[in-house]
Every structure is written in structure tokens, then in C-alpha cells.
Length: 249
Image (cartoon, rainbow, N blue to C red; front, side, top):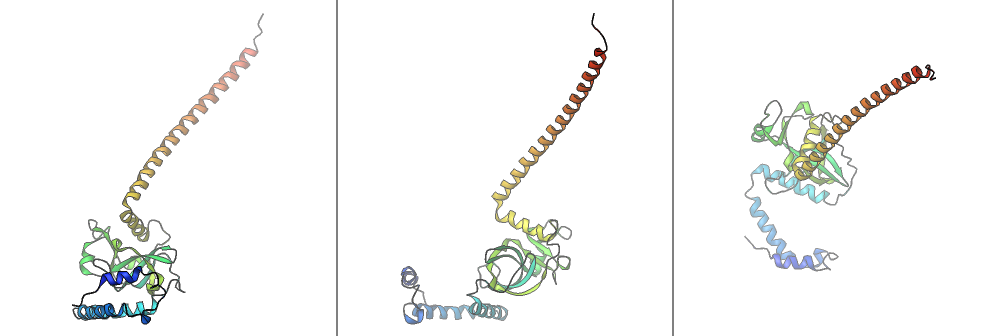
């Protein structure tokens, strides 16, 4: 396998003029690129046909859409999109997968991928089918708006360009219902991604609940004291009226 001269390429990256020069006008990268293509072909020959097809489609999508920053695509919360996730490192999801839009971050879209892997379906959490399942995986199906049973890979949540969104397939049910599966997975993704912040919020909520309970207790005591004060004032008025009728010699 031909080697790649990383030091040479890092020198190109550090060269402040390289950002303005087209690669076709220089020969500094071509020898390394030729080695890369050779290595790429060697690796590609180890693929199964299915991965080869997925990889080719993904690379062509990248060629056609890599410059897309914003587009006419306007994703919304809970939508299910067929999404090109590209070539990634395991255990990241690669190639085309249905994904759920959970948040918009500027020009980026926060998504959670899904898979129909039988093994992951067996391992995934479901409150009825598998309550002790892996909570990084959430089993979903027709009740949640999906065409087929699948697994939401919460641990694979990521922000992507809108250019990766290929085809709108549907919308999850209950997007506006805070008790729905959509909100369950969105909240769980936050818990898993930012555990320290989640603990901080939990502690703040607990402290707020204690303060609220103390406020309610003090409010109850105040109302009781106000009632006693009103009773005493009525008694005082009655005494004033009573003694006001008696003349002192």
C-alpha cells in the first residue's frame, strides 16, 4: 500500500498561500492524491456489494451537494428524513439512514439516526416490549409515525448540514405533546449528551421544589395568622362596643 507523506501535506495546510491556489495549478498534492486513490481502490475491493453501492451513492451526493450551506430544504421538529450520513468511523452511522430532526442549530440540523438492525431491535428499550433494554436505543414503529419497526440511535445524535437531507419520509406523532416519544428521546438525548448539566438542572429543580413547598407552607401560616388576626380584631370590636355602653362614675 503506497504511503502518504503527511508531513508534506501538513506543510501545504500551513502555507498561507495554499487557500487561494487551485490544486490543478500546483503539483504538490497530486503524488499524495494518486497514492490515496490507489489505497482507496484497495480498500474498496474489500467491500461487500451492498456497502460498495451505498458508498458510491454517498460519495456522489457529496460531490453534488458538498457546497450546500442553506437550501430550499426547511426541516422541522419531528420530521423523518432519509439522510446521507457519509462515510464514518464505527460505531457511527454511515451512508443513507432515516433520521429524526430534533433541533435546528443555525444552518445545521440536529438529528438522531434510525436503523432496522435485528440485533439492535432486540436490544432496544421499549416501555412495554423491553423495559430493561438499552436506553441509548429506543424502539419505534407505526405508533410513532414510522413505516417500519426500527431503533432510534440516541447515542449517534449529531449536527449535520441540510445538504445531507435527501427525502422527507414522514413526521413523528405527538411532536407538540411533551409526554410523547419524540420528547422522550429528545430529553434522553440531552441527558446522555450533557450528563453534568442534566444533574445540575435536576438539582436546581429539586431546590426549586423545596423552595416552592416552603413558600406554600409559609403562605398557609400567613393565611392562618391573618384569620386569627381578623378574629382578634372582631373580638376587640365586640369588647369596645360592650364597654362603650358602660358609664364610669
